[in-house]
Amino acid sequence: MPTYDRTDREIVRLLRLDGRMTNARLAEEVGLSPSACLRRVKLMEEAGIIRGYTAIVDSSKAEAMIAVIINITLERQTEEYLDRFEAAVRKYPEIRECFLMTGGADYLLRVEVATAGDFERIHKEILSAMPGVLRIHSSFSIRNVLASRRR
Image (cartoon, rainbow, N blue to C red; front, side, top):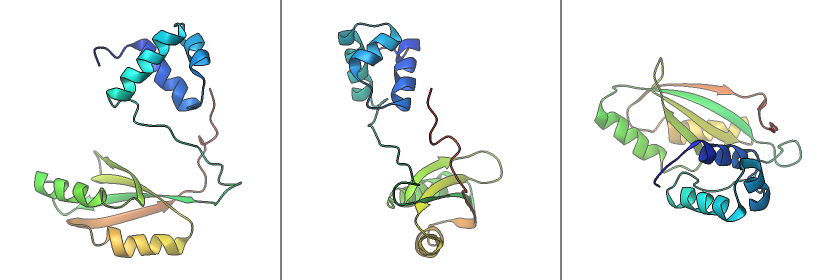
């Protein structure tokens, strides 16, 4: 993609708030013609800036999922250990997000589970078995404060 400017950032911001926003409304919001706006969206999709669209599910009206935030500390922080751990993480769809961090822990992971028993299985069968893991610290979320955020 040749540029990623303020207008592109505004398009991304609006699509994060409402991924089903019509192109006509999106174009109006950012001050472009519909064709120019659609062209920018398509370019960002092709460049991988926009990787897809998703639904935000209200867990009070659907199957309730509990987000678990996990801090992982590795035995060593060498490239080999980091690569092995990251390769292992990619194998498990239960792990929704994984961030390489600065500070006390090496990685921050987010998983979603229906019950504490589901997390126990993930902890025992997946997290504890990952290569190079020295310490696992898990916290269960109470609720996502920003889940219903709108602009």
